[in-house]
Image 1 (tube, rainbow, N blue to C red):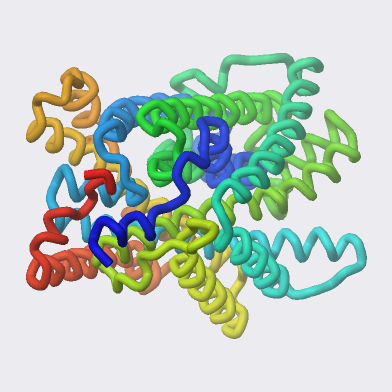
Image 2: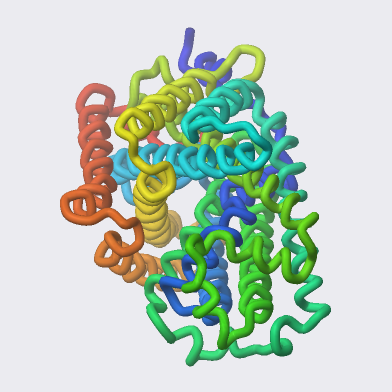
Length: 481
C-alpha cells in the first residue's frame, strides 16, 4: 500500500460535522451544568465570592483574544492533532512531540477524573430511588457506553451531546429567569462586576476555577478533518463556543450571587456541608422542587456528556500520534465502516477502566481524589498547551509572512495571551495543593506529570527524527499536503 493509499484508508470521516455539531461537542466537554453546579460555588467559596461573575467576564475576554490567533492558524493547519499540530508546524517537530504527549495526558486525566464525579453523582441519584450501588459500578457502566459511542462514527456522539447540552441549558436558564424576574434576594445589583468584588478574597484561585470551567472549548480544531468546509466551520465554532459558554457562565454566576444576596453569598456557602448543593438550593427557593429534580438528573447527564466529549478528543490525539509515527502506526488507523479512530478509542477505554479500577481497589474518594487530582492536572496541561499554541502562532506566521493574515491576529494578540498564560501556569503550580487537595509528595508529583509527559514526547519525537527524518518533517501537516 502506498503512503497516499494509507492516508486515504486511515482518514477520519470527512464532511460529517457542521458548525452546530462541533459547537455542541466542545460545549459538552465544558459541561456547562457541571461547571455551574460544581465549579462556580467552589470558585466563589475559595476565590472571590460574588466577584466570581466578573472573573468569568475577564477570562472570557482573554479566551476570545486567544481565539483570534488560534483560528487564524486553523485556516492553515487542518489536522486532528490541534495543539500538537500547531506546535509542530510553528515550533518544530520536537515541540510537537512534547505537546502531543501533554495532550494525551491532559484529556485522559480530564475524562477519567470526571468519571469519578459521574460515578459519585449517579450513585447518589439512584440511592434516592432505592438503588444502592458503589460509585465505581456506575463509572464502569459509563465507560462501557462511552466505549460503544466512541468506537462508532462521530456524528452519532454529536447528536446525543446536542440533546443533552440543550437540556442542561434549558433548566439553568429557567432558574436564571426566575431569579431575574423576582429580583433575587435584595434586588438586582451590578456589584459582582465591580473591581473591589473581583479583587476580593483570593482572585488568583477564582481565575483558575474559571479556566477549569472552560476546558474543552479549544477542541474545535480537533474536528478539523471531519468538519464541513473547515476554514469556515472551525473559526465560527470556536468563537460561538467561547461566547456561548462565557455568557452563560457569567450571567448565571451573577444571578446566583444576586439570588443568595451579594452580602449573604459567602456565609451561605460556608454554612453548607457540600457547596455543590448551592445551585439546587437556589432552585428549590426560586423555581420549585420539580426543576431541582430535573436539574439533579441533568447534572448526571452533563457529566456523561463531558466524558463522551473528552473521550472523542483524546482518541483523536492518540490516533494522530500513531498515524504520524510518534506512537506505533497500528494505533493510527480508522475503522473501515465508521471511519472513527477505533483503536485509539479502545486504548482510552482500557486506560479509563484501569485507573477507575485502581482508585476503587485502593478505596480512594471518587470526588476528592480521582476527580480533584486528575482534573487539576488536566487544567494545567491544557493551559500549558494554550501557551505553546500562542507562541506557535507567532512563530508560524513569522516563518510564513505571505499568509495574508494581519499582524494584530498573528503577532500582537498571541504574544499577549502567551504572557497571560505563563502567569496563569505559575499561579496553578504554586496553588496546586490548595486547588486539588493533594498535599506533600502528590502536590509536587501531580503537576510534574505535565513536565514528564513533555519530556516523553520530546524523546519520542527525537527517536522519530533519527529513524525516519521525512516523517519527522511531516509532523502536524494537514493530510492534503
